[in-house]
Amino acid sequence: MEPTIIGVIGCGSISDAYLRGAARSRLVRVKSVADIRADAAQAKARDYDVQAVPVDALLADPEIAIVVNLTVPAAHAPISLHIIEAGKHVYLEKPLATRFAEAKPVTLAAAAKGLRIGCAPDTFLGAAHQACRYAIDAGAIGVPVAGAASLLSHGMEHWHPNPAFYYQHGGGPIHDMGPYYVTQLVNLLGPVARVSAEASAAFTTRPITSEPLAGQTITVEVPTTVNGVLRFANGAVAAVTASRVSIRTERRMRIFARDTYLAADFSTRKLTVIGRGIGQPHGLDGVRREKAVLHIEKRRLLG
View 1 (cartoon, rainbow, N blue to C red):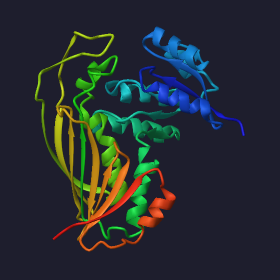
View 2: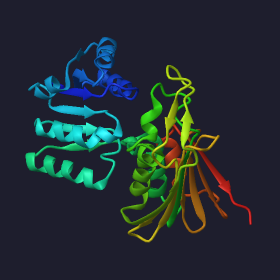
View 3: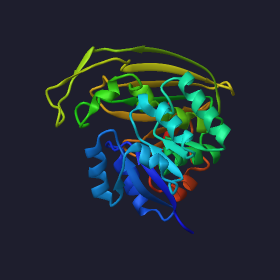
View 4: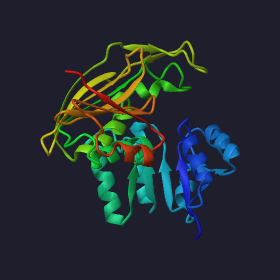
């Protein structure tokens, strides 16, 4: 089977993950990359043995069937529309758009042309998240009734080479990291019926300490802490906290049932089922066997 030919628009840090993955795949082949910064596209072209071309040339190439949109969040919707107008399928990094009103025209344009849109995250298909799905399906905790997720860090300006867009329109922790956890909660608990949230920005500026922009200052335009509540169609309720003001990094999720709960720590790759009189909860041995990448632990709750 011949590989599907793809192009990539946007040659920032995340593009390496896509280009490395494509290079290992027999199903796709990257032909061209493009970026508003020609030097960035040329650097990736050299690193991955592909060609660097202007955006218009990439979109006009009849061999390219799918275009991967890795631009900054504020450009996701307009660039995706250009890709669709060129008659190509689009896969893009999250979020699909920065506002619902921007996303709707993208989906309508694709439907009108019979094209497909794919959007990150796909991490809920990975081993860690599927271990949670497996544990619930196996009856390890019973019927889920609630959940909680926390994604905390001290910000991107300490390691990212160009972190300003994380604090500009379309950025912020809920647009950047929130989709991972909201997607997983939906996968585990079903569709969401209602959303409420409060947000704040603790600091108006953020100093960059990473190279090559160390010493420069970012003006913060978006909330850096969001506390949200998702009410699901089945009656379950989940809290989501996304923040870039925590000195400690945390990536955790919990799913609660009547007398038991599942705790997943994605930083340590540890899945724990905790409950009263837990004994040997049905299903955990299957999780260990099928999803061995996670450390599985059963813990009895005292009292």
